Length: 314
Image 1 (cartoon, rainbow, N blue to C red):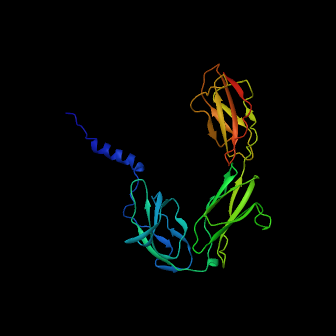
Image 2: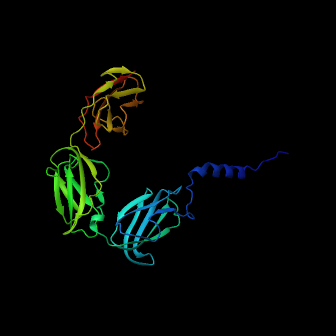
Image 3: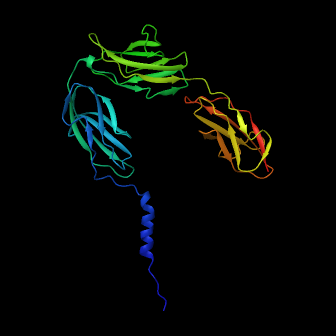
């Protein structure tokens, strides 16, 4: 008599083992470990940094701030989703509660809730928080928008923009006051700029904000020079297409065409690359293929196309 082994339980186990790496871990019963501000903090600092320890398996964090408390909300200040474990925000004097939780695609942790009270203080002890431009941005258009957060006690805001690190305050690109929380400036010269903001009223000024930086660049990179293969060369697959490196290029666009030098060879082209080479491994013996490359800089400016070359597969 033949004996049959029931393999179903084994198959089920193997299936679950194979899929375990694709199952997102639940963070439902976990709690965020908050570092700052301390619970029940009383302070005269309007600018606060909300900070907590990272939670494993959390893809982002939901931070909420209300006034005065979550069980008696009169004002929702913040409800934001962020990927980092720190978030800076400028608040008015008042009583607040804030909370944070971790989230991923399928679950969310418990909220950790803390309270905070901010008392009125001299404007000169505070500083303005910049929001736009953020980071060391690159811009290809001359119209630059500057924005910042409201600072309690401010009547106007002074915006300064310079390309010489504010060494000569009598000769800056821009030195203007506004009662708005933003200002649009049109630049006339390319270059790297610094900007800062402070709050002012009739009796005192705040500290300057941190100094922001950005670059206005409206000029495209140099023209790419193709290296190999030589024009109209006969080559074997795969074909290594190479070109020179451009100093201010962040990426390159390669276009590969059919023999008419106009029709894209396939839906794969054009392609964006960060290297100075591309391996072409398609086509048939005797087929003629054309290609060209251009560079893009950090501001998104496109350089001129290289010459167009062709090669024939052997």
